[in-house]
Image (cartoon, rainbow, N blue to C red; front, top):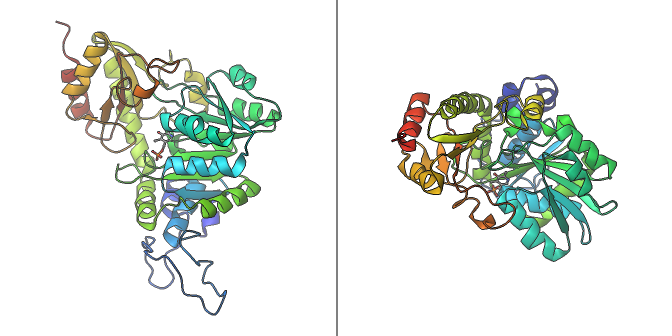
Length: 390
Ligand SMILES: *Cc1c(COP(=O)(O)O)cnc(C)c1O
């Protein structure tokens, strides 16, 4: 079966394991080798074997990863980068020019906000933050004729707000703009934005795609060949590509994405149930809960509701800090999406830089990235860390 057939006919897990690579014709190697080479022998001038001439332009280990991520997102073409932010910067400079404008989430990932606010703005690209859960507000933020991209995350971090991808795609397209979805939190297993009308998907593959907290990487998947040409040109011209070792690790992680995500979701659902009935918990924020304002949209566009949970404790900021400090199975740390469970205090950690702004998060908020450990150990750890009512 060719990669193309895997893309169009096979199920998600089959694509995750087989798309993008045929066993090596010479050796039969089932897994793409780590091609630690910068250059390639040519058979006479210009006689390239398989199109490879120099590893910034293309490397077979990276090609395999780019094929599988495109197949999982059901896009035309995938591109792998050294980090999520490198992917974002390449995309922005491929599609925007000085004087253009983009709409971004008012609770965008901090690094994405900083990229627009402190880096791209210096080069003349304007941005307007708007809430992704409010389609009218996103439409109102568009500057007709100037807005080139509508940039969305869903679910967002750490309040897990949900944007309606289908509705936002038509808002963007009505204005002649493209819809970009940062699909890092959902992963392609839970949500495929391109099938809902989005034009470009962005990933920090550092998170669920890699899945083992052992590699930093990013990816773009596009549905349009013209956009693909521009991204390919800029990927090669700017050079922030994934190296072969990193590409290998990310590809290895992607093979188990489906089973990992199901266990992340199973465990998260049980943690939500536990927290909801705990007397030291004031509020649980999870798109799978019916009272979550984005529940209906999330249920429409996501297969399940993911492994990230935010919750507020009854005893204020100090209580939240104490819970983070007491946790043992949940590791205190930033990032998310790995097999191990992580706990963090957004107000003092991932979101410390937005303190005092409109983006400030509640001081009694805790964010969990629920891993795939034994659920009883996770619940026991949370119960002990939360403390008792007296
Ligand atoms: C981590 C993250 C990024 C940035 O990716 P890096 O790999 O850290 O550069 C972008 N978007 C979201 C939603 C993230 O969680």
